[in-house]
Length: 292
Image (tube, rainbow, N blue to C red; front, side, top):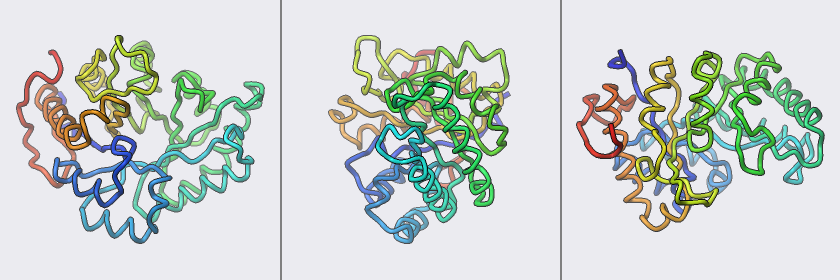
């Protein structure tokens, strides 16, 4: 039974890239969203005190902070500089009452795979105690883009298991890893370790690796995947992050309205409620977002 399940819904700042935090909070709450995933470069426009005041005034929680790291040096930082960047993100997360910091591994950058894995393991082993002290969980997010050498859920799970750190979890991007997630459903480790599920749709007719469509605008069985996650016990964050030309063309207001419509439809179809203090807990019956 899913009737007691609460959806922890958030919208990523990447989805509304041209808006500042104050504008985002205003529009997010207008559409009934009370959680935001923060992107570090946009936070630099404000002091942490200013950001916290805006978040508190809007009644919006922070689901995660992304993306410190790049421990392989693929973006020009030294290993120590990447660690310091991550320590700073952990400190920000603690100040903003944010439970999760999403780390990026960096590309292979000429290293052997074994050495690249060793760098990540060393980074996790150093950062995990500081994160635990701050009440923060670190999250590794594999990617098929060039920015990461961890390109599968299996490899990332193996990395987490090798670290032996209990406060390091997994972020699963349904846009990239829906098929692999289905193939791993017979095992429990992927669901036990997952802390964030990123949601965007894709269409076979669109070849761009940057076109992340709003849910329901593509071919992925997103509602079925969410059902699989919930029935497997997942109760973590669900972060919507559609990005690309389609989002730019439709505009952010229409995007947020479509996300609200999709979330309400999922609530109705899966008989779940949203973990959201700003809205009624009664699921709304909306139709035709995704085929049943």
